[in-house]
Image (cartoon, rainbow, N blue to C red; front, side, top):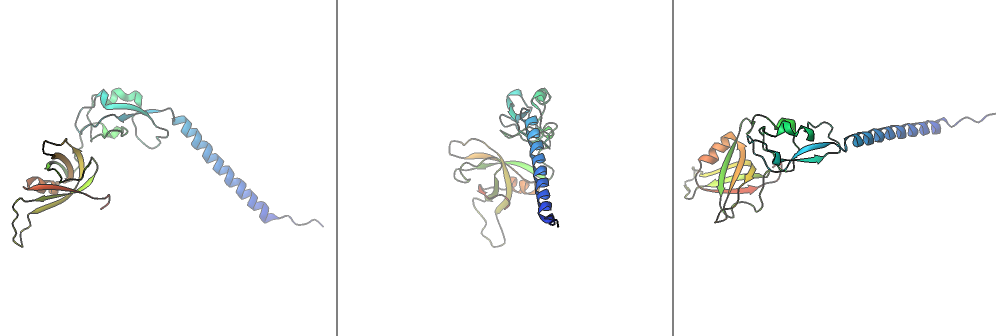
Length: 201
């Protein structure tokens, strides 16, 4: 009498073989896609460009991107379509150029404002740079000490740029923050201090 076949074991082998086949197919397609894109060249930002400024040839450089799937990157051979146009938003050095970043200025975003504040020496963290989230504190030089009068203005914003230090170690910092907060900070008089906070705080 013929012994029964080990059905469960064979089914397991078939499942394992099928899984390996699927994995091999995925890896193959990934490798093909990677090879297809590995020689593609795209435009990147060679030096910072403020929103509204005209993009020049020296503002751009060419980089290789392995797999740009899903990104509206600008190919290197379309350089002429970018040079001479304006930056819709600030372009940061090293960033890849996306088609939506080129065109009429769309900066600052609706409901937000750009302001520049003079920050004295020692009133901001060393090495503060664009993209840093900060708390802006403005304290009157001669504050009113009455209990119901708060002379301190507080707002949260993002650093856009930092100008070089002056002779006494101060610097001019451009900030992006809510429009209402921007008006409050800009109209306040007193010493400005910037406190760096972590992302998401």
